[in-house]
Length: 360
Image (cartoon, rainbow, N blue to C red):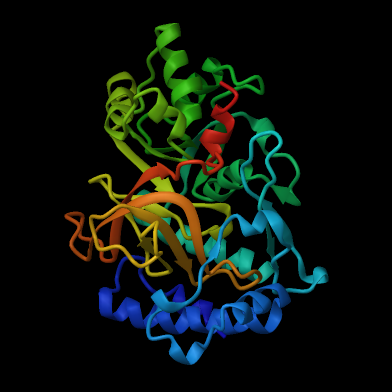
């Protein structure tokens, strides 16, 4: 099996195309065999498509499964008594949600990988953290929602954690003022989901005619753009408005999903989402599912070396994206860089922000 302790010694954006291709092909083939041996449902799927590992020349050839299957089937490669945590995806009322079964080992390496990737953008020190959400979102520790899991996951980068919103989602001005006074002239970390930042933080500050100086802040946000796109708010406008109101200029979007927790795709200073050495993206043609060439929009496939307790190492998402290039982003990070165009037409709303925003 994969030696995760050795893998975690790799710098997240350090492998060029050829090295990464070899590493991912070996790792993902190993995981495919592991899940074939330990998950009967996965084995049946591989048998149904006549999968032959000997014919795999690249990780591009390893079968993917639709991400929606985690809503329909119990997919796990561990015994029931090994389940440490069950993660659930976002879902609007009435939607079924994905269930992801983690053992202690998989959960641990997901967290370590997240630290390895995100610390490249925030630095190694834990920063005073302002969470643009309400404390009520952290409830059942045994069954995390994607939103709660996102907050808890990114909380490991923070200290003196303060929630910017009350339980009724109104802005807690006094809590923010106390936090900023306490950490005046310090670097701070802000985290939240895109729509909530826009709806309950930015818009409320405008209504109150209130400004905070967040020029020492690093903002990490993610979880869906569908609602903001419908309001005609682009990535650039989102950043420009926050900078204008609060002085925030160090802003990083990220792309990720509960089905592959840990392997987040962080946006660099040029606004490009980056695949780390632990994961990759492939875009596929909507007609024949063949890989798209760079620059052509396609259905996003994500691969990750982390999912050992469940067969989530190669997934076809419900998102459309474009791979912009590989190993040549102006930021200097190696690997593919890309953008997400949005949900596929008729796909369910499921980003954390978008699920929440469907109420509005």
